Length: 151
Image (tube, rainbow, N blue to C red; front, side):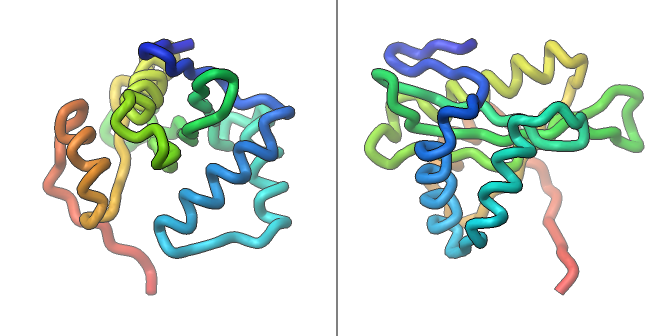
């Protein structure tokens, strides 16, 4: 799908489950959370499914090993005729950070959005995620919105 030097990005496959689970576990740990094993199974099955309400997954690999993941979703938007794309999860193994993995994954989501006719792609991150925000500031536009959630 997308290629950056040694990094290639492709859709998630069923035989990726063990490597995907390790990456997603590390991603969740970074945000100081976890999910039960049963949820891993459910989410992985949804990522491979064909329900348009579910997330799509792309993975980055280097030398045949998964080193990153992204999960994204297309949805309607009240201010647009077209769907928009929400990039929910993005993670690169710390051992390969700075080697274009995050950029390759985001650009692959941009390409998927273009193919789907979704002009907008957006995502959230924690304010303390300084390393990722350096990349985001180069390839995205920081908006003035503040997120609120139900307590």
